[in-house]
Amino acid sequence: MFTDALTLNVLLLVEDSALRTTAVDAAADAEAAVTVLRRLATNLARAAGSRDTDSGVADRAAEHAYGLLDRAFRDWLARLGPDSDPTAERVAWQRRLRRAVERLGFELVRNAGPNAWTGRTITDQNGRDVHYSSWQAEAWFRDGLAKALPMATDRSHQRQEEAA
Image (cartoon, rainbow, N blue to C red; front, side):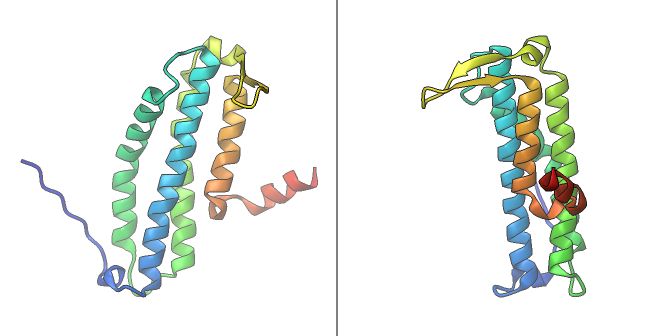
């Protein structure tokens, strides 16, 4: 037998509520961040020379992420109320989400092994040679998270990168 409960403010059930939109967008943010994590897992598998690049490693990474994010999302939803600023709450969610997914991603990179660090070159579908390595996969991961969670990106750091 299994039971589940979700605590949330009634405003999240009102169709035209800004908080409802924020909650739906926050769920989409989580999906986007996990997609980036899945891509990291696949790229690390490619870098290590694994044949398990179709979905196995990505599925396991996503499952782990969703397991960890479930409680965080429920807690965040329970905090939303009539005095909540939808924009500020979404920024807070994206920052929390980014920290959690970054930790998972860096753990994947750390555990990828020496073959992934050295990497390998693979010809992609367009006939281009692409070098996969753990450091390259991590760079793509950071870039993907910044795009998936733009409200969580440190603006001063972003301006410094754009100026360089």
